Length: 431
Image 1 (cartoon, rainbow, N blue to C red):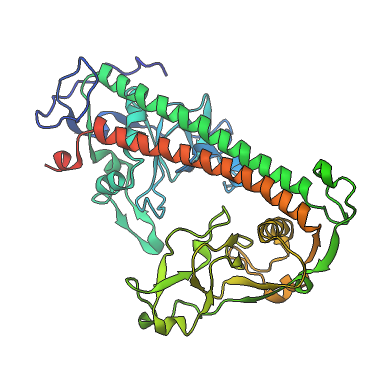
Image 2 (cartoon, rainbow, N blue to C red):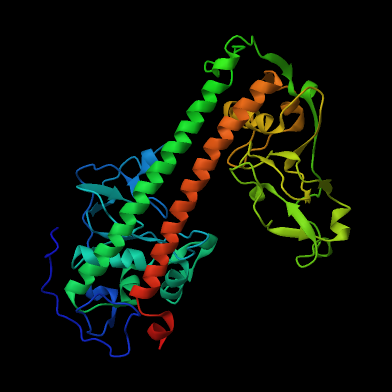
């Protein structure tokens, strides 16, 4: 589709009170608050040619289902799926935590793909409007404000909204196609920067994962395949069961979550649970919950500097705590070490161990691993100087990953700030 496609759509009259805070030079016409049906047209072209099935991700957009999810969840016969083409706008009607009324994305690929028949697929009057619509729905608050009056929740939290109802919702948009293009090009330039930054971050993470596989001995081997020059002749790593290297135990505090009087969100102590353990060897700066003195009696205290591992859900996440806290039973605490161990290295080793051993964990979607099973894990250790060298290397790589993560977050924040300036304020739209 060219940028000139469908430009003969009647131009709506603007609303004098509907103006963004910041505009590109040369544009002064007021914006219009019109139903989406004025700029989007539903199409129901079916997948009779057997195109690949794509899914919609909030972070990644519209992506190949197998590449994104690792497998296909499509029906064996996808001929009734809807075709998505470049510039089409797709509404998923699938609730997410931050987007309880579904996600809106624009197709940004060449060619055609197959999309779930549950999605609404719409062709915009021009690609610039499609990109503006996607950007508008990227903010959870704007998405909720627009969609909540149109949606009804059905059984099992399903969304009940027709495509026609979706198109009846009103969105503030510029009436001049040239202004639409300017805004879309501005947002697109930020999107390209974010994509490039995300690729750089993914490359660093992939490099780290590959490096860890080389810096730790593989199954059946007693030396890593990659060693720093000063340790080339340092000999084999010593192997022991985990229970012979360290003492550890599970946290306490029975699930689900205990009694209300066990919590004190104002003056209580941090209470660490699985979702408080990040992927950067640290806890989140603020835990989701805090417990009272009464709750503390039911839990286990861990001082700053304690090594912990998640045993349920996202098993194998490791952290060295940087504040005092209490801990629940879905986490394992390493209390003392029976052999010389550099704690940061040991945390890396445990993470690498879980990456290899996760398949032994019983359970379905929510996996759990027991303390008893963990006790028999076999661990190989070098001397302290080599442990320290490996820990320093991986820590420096983590610092790079953190810096690149912060850059990506800054770009996302910048885009949201742009949206607040380039679109009329919510209170103006409501008025």
